[in-house]
Length: 279
Image 1 (tube, rainbow, N blue to C red):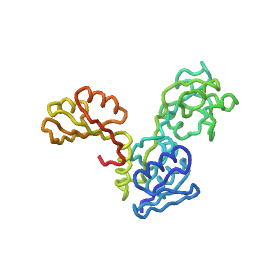
Image 2: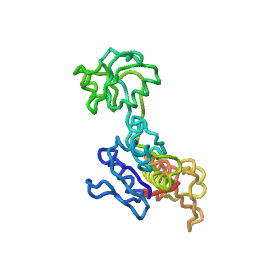
Image 3: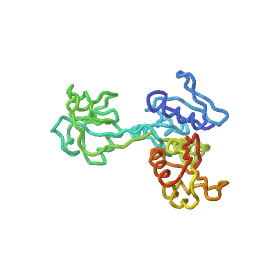
Image 4: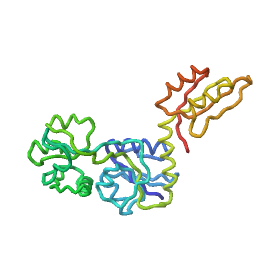
């Protein structure tokens, strides 16, 4: 059986479990369950701390896993990234007291607090900047005010929390992270099926299916509005002057596309959700 590591808590866990369920896999019903066997699909799920997943997969104790790219790099694991998933986006930045740091070089010789010592340490080593890394498990934004560090490196969204602590962002982006599917090695048996299923879920999230009727003479113009992934499916109607068109459209463009088609002359424009796909 394919052994899959899944985050056991937090936002990564919620999104990963939902995605696996949409892909047709069994998921745990009790949050206390640590192992779930899905014999129908030939897989076994192990619910683990998100920070530990890259280590388990990299050591080949488990075959594949879902974790954050940041956690993969921070663990310095030998696991390989297979697929970028559609959730868990985050940005890592440096921050320090307002006006003290202008660029990365200003960090040289300072104390830097972070929860991601491996990730940040490797970044600074590549940049040729030497600092004293101070590892904290959380709330690193308080480290400067409490005198533990001179600057911090952490996940940043709006920067509001940092500003409340008298800090400002400076220097380059350390990492743009997202959830990823990782594997212990290339060619793991069953990995291709899992990857295709997860890709199908992402396609279903990103696209809708659009059907509309159109005068046959306008098909070429309509195809420029809705080109689809390859090309639209066009079928004749009983009225020889009209055709039915079916096409996949990016979900975020749905209403703009419907407006453009209606203005062109399309009618009976219908939109349906896609529950699964193989592209």
